[in-house]
Length: 133
Image (cartoon, rainbow, N blue to C red; front, side, top):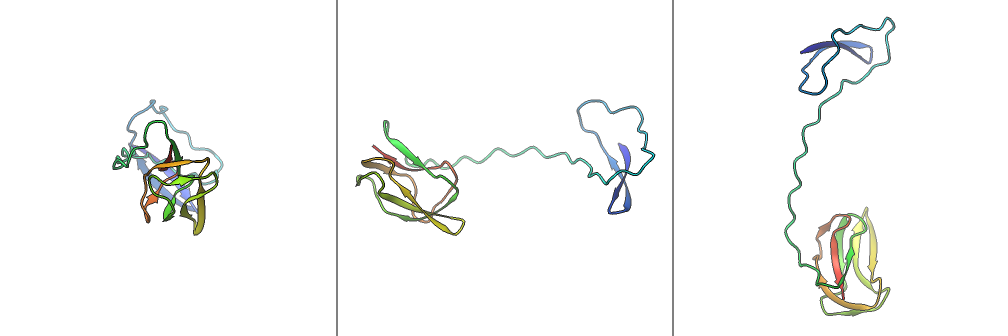
């Protein structure tokens, strides 16, 4: 344990800090002659838990193009289903993000191979939503 005196908003506090690992600490600490601006004590971050695996959604068929979510949001309305023919620019679904309705359009002509989201589903940026063949 090492003891430090930290001043926050003009109020001095004495703290003890336990060094868990890393490089060896200097042998002695010499306090500066002039009071420096307040510095926050470093806090060791706890290791992040591994993200939970998502349940497997309907996989995109081989050779199809996947349309991914451009931003996190909620699927407000689905305008297509598997087997529907679409033209470039057709509205596939509406994604609500930050209180705005964003139309997700078909990037090319094709047939909807699969729809991997449901109305009301929450998606993260990059999640697969629709596959075109």
